[in-house]
Length: 137
Image (cartoon, rainbow, N blue to C red; front, side, top):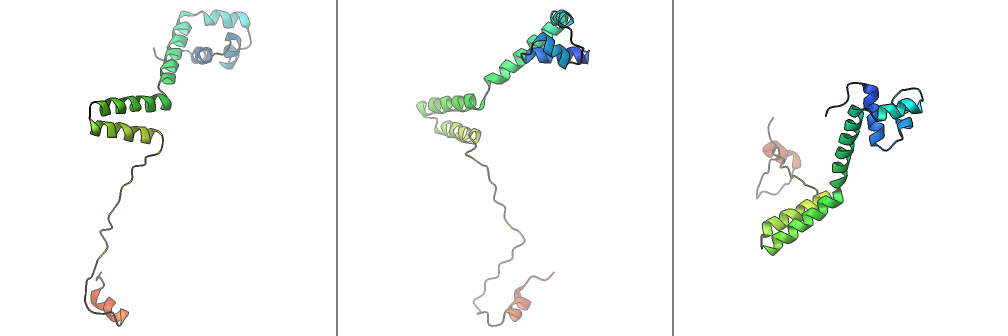
């Protein structure tokens, strides 16, 4: 169900879904304080459906936590080790480390603008050497 068409009703439903009293949610939604009106609106079928939907979304989000993801990756790792699937176990271990913030992907870049000169001649005069070997632009 998408957000309610009436913005005040939507804010009211969100307030109820967060656990606010009907009176508080009613005032926070932009209405003047009225306990009877807040009570009536809280029994509106559309509002009640929206509150239930928002609470379902919240409970799903609460179920997937960093802790639960790390625990699940640990279970996958143990199962993979039991089955001697070491690459899968390593992948699960890597996932756990990334979730815990202990693994950082790094990339090394190569400087392609570096020129190397190999010579058996000793460098007696740096200026002469640079004239002879330095890249010409």
